[in-house]
Image (cartoon, rainbow, N blue to C red; front, side, top):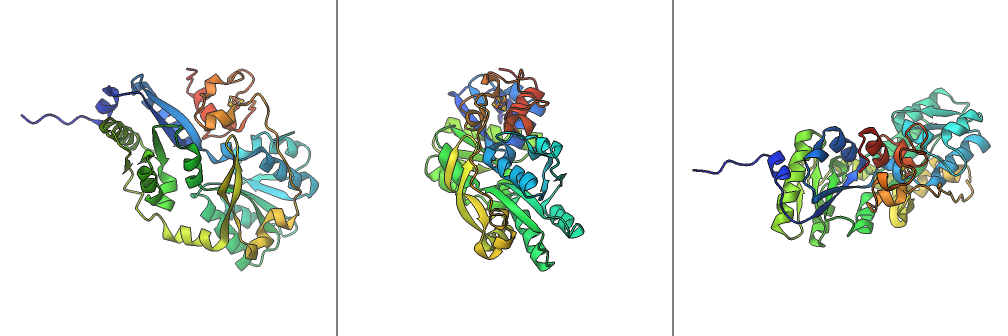
Length: 349
Ligand code: SF4
């Protein structure tokens, strides 16, 4: 009689292979895995660790300081995603700057920020452009449209980052990477395939319960079989080539630069900035922002959390001094941050 096929859940719960560390590169995966109760299914020897894939969490302290400089010293209206407002800078957050009179507006997209600039021609408006391959194209689009519409009061402050160099920097931190499906939807899968050839295993995962369980089950089966592997477990969205239109737009308007990652330091070539021909829309050049070296709170271990070196609950101030109401570091502020996930879902392992 043919043996009954196991479900993804049965494969995960019944895993009896060697210890394995799986890194959730993406903060949304961290939150969804907690929320769906998937952690409770994992046998002891399967460890999930958080990675650097939350754009707010990896944004350097100095970037917040630069935004505060623009808002308070240059009276620029700052348009930003909501998560960034409470991230601590060296001396204060953007929320603190707002209390001192800064104009901080929350927007849902860079194009919204460009629209705000269009509707308020007397204000100088800067959008805080953070994020990975998923959000960079929309920042470019806002600049392109601003130029087409003749806006001279709109710019972006870039801290855009790309994942490939981070994967390189994190090699060895985990046995398997759970790649973020939305990033691969833009970039395609070639890089992940190349990483597998270099010995780095990973699976691309979607975001529903079924997609996450499937990705984890595939990862565990392939890990037990041995040898580096790559499997695209999100084929309904992720193709080999990704989105050529988005890639072309970014390539036309931006160029790689070195970028500082919270906790990981400066990673060569891991940032994106506007090319020279778009410099009128580059807030750093437009306002000649002086070099600012940000300083994180010394108690904060966001850097270790983002590299999978410790769990949020290993941080001495987790849940005591540092809470979502009074965050000390970015990982507790962001809706995708590992510390906020651990706090919200009550896992203080
Ligand atoms: Fe930083 Fe707070 Fe997380 Fe500790 S608990 S690492 S202080 S964000």
